[in-house]
Length: 206
Image (cartoon, rainbow, N blue to C red):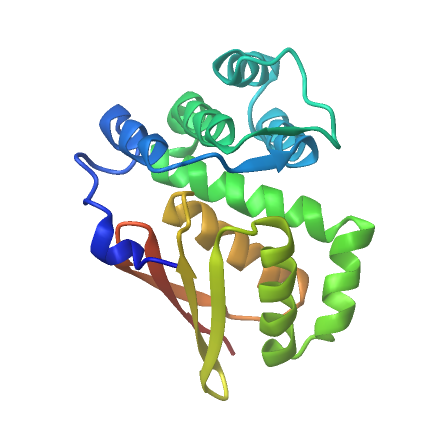
């Protein structure tokens, strides 16, 4: 696969701006996702916001509803995510914080499901096993995103995401919820962009 950091131009505006959204959408080719992913996003929007926000997300996606096992364009998911964050920004303190809460709620909901509980069981509360399981589970859902994990100490690790089209705060919120669900305390995250679509997440825990 061609190195995205060498071939992708930087975004033309700050994260959460319309210019940055259009830049992000322009990089998506023909990726599709199952409707169940879209429905999980809508449920998060419903929990954090209201039915008006859900209806607006459906409008920008151009769909009256999503069928769980049908495929839909990935760019519709990005449009929905940005629209929801804009609508929730006043409530949560801006775009970045709204996106963080969306990622956190999405992961929390996942870990309360049967599939999520199975991921936690495989991780067995040990951070190293949890990270390995997390990488495998993530790549089963987001096939075009490259994710890897490397332990850097007894209580630290680096997660690397390449070709990740979601804003960094979304991923950070999801990682915090993952460690909370696994009852691993004191999680701290420092993110560092390594390319327009690439990020390293430094993780520390107690």
